[in-house]
Image (cartoon, rainbow, N blue to C red; front, side, top):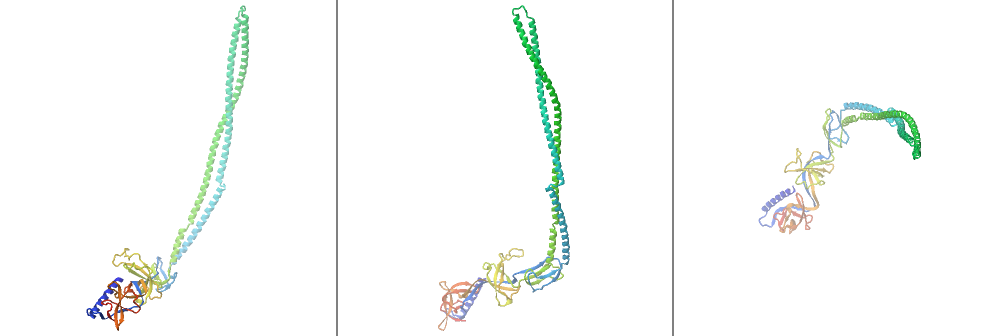
Amino acid sequence: MKKHKKIIIGVCVVLVAVVVVKLALPAGSATQTEPIRTTALNPMTLTNTVSVKGVVESVEETKVYSSSTFAVDSVFVEVGDKVNEGDILCQLDTETLKITIAQQTAALNAANASAQHQLEMSEENYEFALNQYANDLNAQILSANSAAKQAEIAWESAVDTYNSAKDAYNQIKDSVASLQSQLAQAQEQVKQYTQLSDTLTTEIDNLGKELDALDPSAPDYDDKKAELEKQITDKTTQLEAAWDKLASAQTSVTETQAALNTAQSGYAEAESLYNSTSKQVESTRVAYDAAVEQKDAAQAAAKKELQTYENAIETSKLAANTESQRYELQKLQKQLNDATITAPISGTVTAVYATEGATGSGLLFVIEDTEHLKIATKIKEYDVHSVTPGMKAVIKSDATGDDEYEGTVDTIAPVAVKGASGDTVESTNVEFETEVLVDSTDTGLLIGMNARIDIVLESLDNVYGVPYDAVTTDEQGQSIVYVAREEKGGYVARAVPVTTGMETDFYIQIESDQLKDGDRVLNSTEGIQDGSRITLR
């Protein structure tokens, strides 16, 4: 924009200067007879700006909506009224809602009381059963424990009796076996001594026959006789000893047989007792196992009873949980609260859509802060990188005349303006939405007014500024301006070298130690040379 203005202004000045020169001077004249415009040098403020247009809006605007289906009972504000946050704007008709809330509140209280009573009863039952169980006072467990203990005692007693019978049986069994062995030995001795006696008797008879058969007349008769008699005597002695041992063995057989008979009689009794006590042990063990099972069953039944009571507590707690009813009541209470429409912010009522008797749903009011304003505008894409938040701005409006107000760039959209579809608009005139805060107070600006904004990109104070066409270059490329110097009763254009600086839409900054306040700089250099005599307008 700035460059475009400079080009237009320069072209216009050149054309005017050319026309003036051609009309006023003959060719080759060194005197400028046509009056020339000048700019008197005085320290000034140069400002480089971006100019845009926008609409005055409120910094804070709130649209008050309601989703209620209740009818509007009363409206308390009008357009233009000042309100504070929390002020009542209108009231909806809620008589039916209040009755419903009262009914549900009563029902909720009754449900809470009933559920609490049931919970207390369940807790009492549980505590009683737990106390009975923890302190071994449960009747079923006590009975089962007693039966199990008695069965255990009976089983242990049967085991003791069985062990005693077993020991006696084994002793008698061992005794019978021992007597049977002794009897066999004694019978074997009787047999041996009987055979020995028979053998010796036969030998003695044979020796007697041999003695009787001796010939007395034989010379060795006496010797043989003596020898045979001696043998008969020895055999007789042996026979008598054998008879004694045989008698002793027969006595041992008789006595051992008697002892064996007695032992065998006791063995039968011991065996019968042993068998009966063994069966008694088995039956008492079965009875004990059954009693233990009954004991475990009683324990399990007591635990199950505890679990049943505990479940009853949880069920009672669930019944006591009226959270859903409370939520429903809260929803109704919220509807009641929302039926009183209040101002969410402090400001001025700028629109009223609520109508008494009509349904109070949708947009009801618009409240805006008329004390704090902003200008909604758009910046062209070729200026957007020059503008940053925080830059100062000068605000004007046709409605407020020549009054100027201070402003500050607040926000610049990070993306270009989008179309209704949400896509960026493809155009050669791309713009970025921008907001400028109005810093001045007590302005004549009103919401909805059109405004012009000059955003200050840069600013220099106490500098010299001249029109663009007042600056040209000499043959060496040095920037110069022509200053009207009074010489010999007239004015002469004198070239003064300058350093250029900041440029605005209409002016360019110049600096030179040859310039001073009040110097008159020619606005155009067309046809001017150093030393040219000029006439000033």
